[in-house]
Image (cartoon, rainbow, N blue to C red):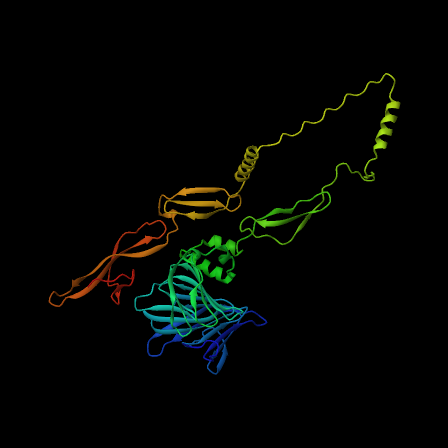
Length: 466
């Protein structure tokens, strides 16, 4: 296998210049003697330099790349590629990879080698049985037929190598391996919403998955850590009709691409001796503004300007009482004592809970709700307001209420003899349908003729009976 860091074979270095260049370049990979395939750089940020053998040049619109060129994306750059118009790659900053492209259109064989950084891959058209698309790192190989996934690889301070694989749509088969391409024991198919980290120790004696089956689910931290360019790439896929494991709206909230709606939050109550503190919190995404606003101290109601606030002397009160008594007329009657205010009754826990419930009800009634899907089953969808926490459940009554995740299923296969009975030709056919992995709904069975490659259906990948 090609050694990534020591090779001088064709590097693309996308870096930073004094002026950031934003544009698109068109590139093509010509596969000698086997047809024409293209790689189009749809967008890039930063200055891109092409190094091919001993030749060095800057990228420009219409530049052609040759198969096997290396790509190194600089610390403040990114690159978007389209291979054969149906395979897309978004390369993040500080990423190094090179592409091995073989075959011709309709029979493509593509392998992306990575050893540093992050690439987000999107495969639009499902590959035929004879085609393949793989991503290879020093400790793992990812194989797909049509999906959206992200691969990140890095080396820690101890020389241990890691590969992270995040699946946003479809399925990805991950095989742990060693640098000499020898397969390790761990392998598994990961589905949308799952993430795995593959670890290769410094001695290169162990290559393994770092989590159990219950720990593969992607959490909020994963989405919040995505670069904004990656989030926008995923958002574009959602706009194009791809059904991801997270909605575009929630993803944009996590990435702070949606406008904030700020509310005050008291983090320290003021007292008579100390000022309080208040910050602002976005009720949409939960982000806290680091700016602290001071809340004035609580004023003492018994304190007037110029009044002596020292502790009263008991003898002063006695002297004042004697003076007042002497000043009274002889026939004056004592004023009736002012009755003390009744003490506030102490609330029981049940009463406190009832008050809190009423306050919550009032808050929810006056909230301009922003509902997000918090959970989903085969028969209902649960929505939660991100502002006040109100929960509502909606029963699924038709297809429109399920964010379907379809997979192809085969219903049967065979062939028909057509043409001259004396010399008939064979027309293979396959019957298949789609099934939602969330609610179990199925579509109508359809029959397709002539949809076979390598003994399998090119739509559902089912075997064709002969």
